Image (cartoon, rainbow, N blue to C red; front, side, top):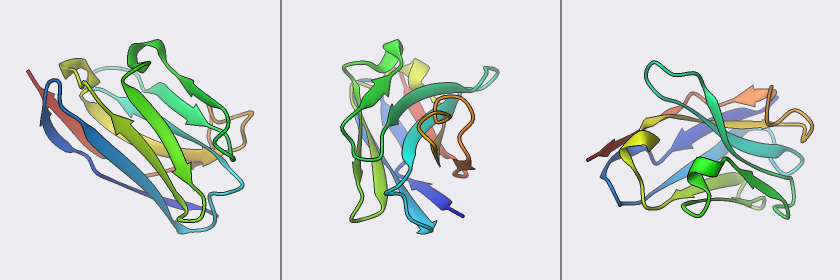
Length: 121
């Protein structure tokens, strides 16, 4: 069992940066692929990015390519999402996820509680 806890959300002006962190309060993240989803008000939840267990392979949705970077530190049992050049449309609740690589982009086994990111224009 893996318990995920996100932190780092908040309010930032457009063009600013935030770094989200996702730590495991229970279990180890090192064997899992990890991902971040987001859900904006009135919209469906969408996949933002994924990373494999070693960090050697990543995926980004087109809308965040070149602006967001996912990384992981297995020794610290933590995954990060660095978000730069934030836009108002990035406003959403961001969820950290963990699970098998084959499922991480659709139905991850584990979810965090979410952290709010608000970008003012």
